[in-house]
Length: 446
Image (cartoon, rainbow, N blue to C red; front, side):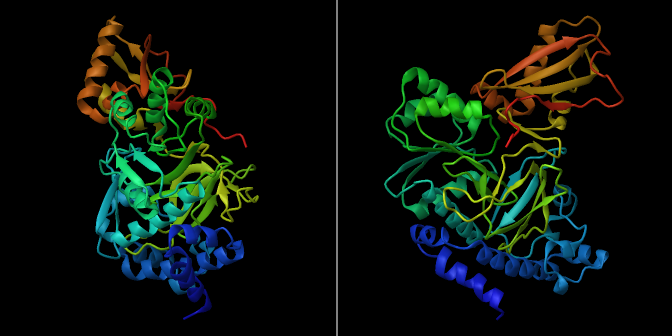
């Protein structure tokens, strides 16, 4: 056993596998050099493991002339990365290194085909332990009353929340992503003091609570979408409590990082991931890339997150030693996360297919004129078609083909707008950008 391997095992056996409260006390005092040693050991191990067990990685390393035994740092992998398209275009068995016990899907971005990601139950428990430590750092205790309102359809957040709260030992009720009005009516009797949800859904609940009344709250934790600081302040003013953001992906098995009460970037889960910023610009912003360090069922090597951010190396006043990344500035691919859900051009291509009276040129603009997202259809009318009939046809198409997006609309999580022009007014150049995010304040100016 090497010294690095011994250090790695010490972390799991003597720190993480203890009670979350004990692990939190120890973890806040880990020096960064110690964390770096653990990451180095785990990185080298997962490269060799993936090369041995995964047909995809074994083939790719051979094609590029990479000897896994000589890989010490990410730079030794040269220009090799794993992209989301790799998960779609290759049989999933190519990535599996162990027997899967649980699986989730992540919605398509530039493709209608979802990505499937597989895990083991032990990996679920391990990630939940780190999640429990993070929430206890935010103040969660066994005496708190937690309600989660995440959609459970093929999504990781709900099951992970269940396991995290089990480890903390607190009361946990799974409401699911029900209508915000129904949630408010039923939740008031429980007097929950912690809510886990998506920002746009919680915004609607907060609008209801502002008019009907609130109850004492300890913490609001949100994930799954970006949001403006204006929206955060509105929700916090309603409930008179901090609203903390979590950042993650299904591919990462949930949390990549979470804010502390300073709300100045996401503290990274550095014992389970090795993070890189690919091709940073002059301000340090580039694409987030991560390698899973502890996964045995479906490890991912240098996975492109498609999110643009930067590392914050300055120590945080909260005392956690883990580095932070800034709020996500933009997506590298064509997906936009908003109150409607995870939307991308193919969704609107499908919705508009067969709608009479419009030209092939169209654009979708996501705006936020107040504190709610607006999804605006920019369309060109042909043959003098009645705009109201076109709008009704599009609504019906969206309702029948994308029930989840329509459900979010019925719950008031976003607004639908329509603007019409004459043929030829939208296309100003050779290429028409189909999906545009015009929400101000989502870009982190730090």
